[in-house]
Length: 207
Image 1 (cartoon, rainbow, N blue to C red):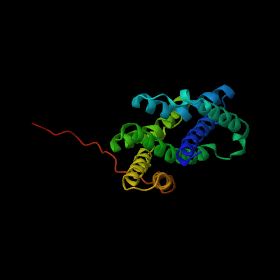
Image 2 (cartoon, one colour):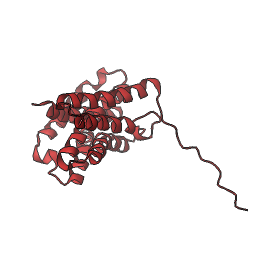
Image 3 (cartoon, rainbow, N blue to C red):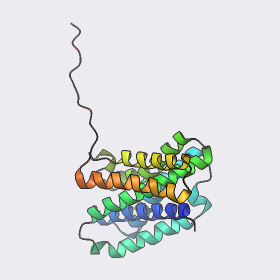
Image 4 (cartoon, helix red, strand yellow):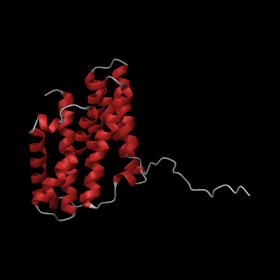
């Protein structure tokens, strides 16, 4: 298994784990675990492949569903060992965000050859699953948290694309993209990094 395929499976497994952890916080049954793990693990990649008009990855290779299933069952029996499941969910999500962002950018670049599309696909692949998880589980959405989230995915995908354009070998490009995204997201969670937010101002008085 080469490094980019490993990144793909790792991203699916890690996102599936966050979905299962969300299910454990809601005290769902095993079917709830399986459903949330699958939606989170394959949601972003499914949207990516539909937009790129290529065979949906888990339909072409059902092993991805098995990865989600095994992950969900494993979390079902071990979630009680984690003192803070929400804390674990956030850190696993950060790792998955970095991994899946790189793979999404790689696939977008391979399919279209466009660096812009590649960055967008990386961002979509690595964020949609987590957003769906939070909506379904009625958890506070990672998208609406103040600290940097989507930006970390965007910059990680951009770093991968730039490294690839600069002629770096694939393992180095993957590593650069992953470390960039994870470092930014980890810093945001640890130190509260944010971007300037919009401040509403009164409208102009034309009288």
